[in-house]
Length: 418
Image (cartoon, rainbow, N blue to C red; front, side):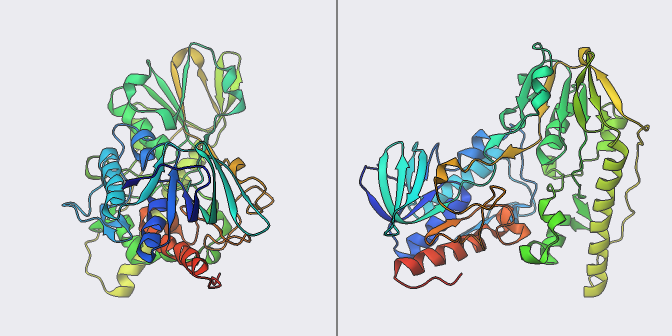
């Protein structure tokens, strides 16, 4: 990595905003093509892997999925799951393999485009210009908490999943709200520490860790599931939360029913505070059943693939629920909880894009495989940028190559094909 001392008045052929794996991947391609560029990172390169995850975090995708341009995972455990610190070191080390030009500790505050097509980039280090700008900041910027969070008593410690590190941060019994990947894994982390945990269960699907002798995500990769273009996917699938599972201790299922049998309190969706209690709706049974149904449907797809391809794979019994909830909504006395972890996601913040016409009517990035209607401006690193694999290591290299090709073509005076 080369530390860039950004100076007011500097001009670059390309500016990449964001120094995570997506931004670095585009940088690699631009470096290979000899395009003068800079990666601008508000914190430090790859910092989200170190600063935005809990102590016992692991990847949920097998290590062999980790392949950045010119930099595939080559460690000793391709079917294992790197820890938080291992992922940070791996991504950070990537920047050193090609002397990525990075300005760390610099915030991009606004980007505009002049009439002559040059971008004006306002940063905390001063104003610079560029012929092309790529947003590699992802889509998860502002932690979300519900409007009624302020109705909870002051004595209850509240924390968003983004700031959770370990059980030692929180007193007593803990309510985790949300069952995406972070919520379920944090609930498990607290459960394994012997805490009394309550979990508000949403509609997130789950997937088995292993099935018929292999990791389910390895089966899905071989089946090409992560490579299907977004235009061929149902809107409901594109909007769905990722399946919950864990890579902890070599990888295993996250079975919320088993947690309940072991003493974790499961509830439906949290809907508010009233009369000294926290109220939940009656969706628990349906949400658990739906998550199980998705996991079993994935197994069906794997079975069909094995049969179609004539693969010799062991046969195993299907999942059987170990716990069934009672019906109806539930309430939890606020005296029974001491802390809440909000794991209900993030809100995007694109305010730094100024007046650039790169968002749709709902405020989401409007693009075709990263290319926007504004010549020279592109996105990378977004979920579903092109395929399901776009939001994970599996397809970052492919997405970055496509976006970088447009930048390189434009820098050489060639009309980029969109």
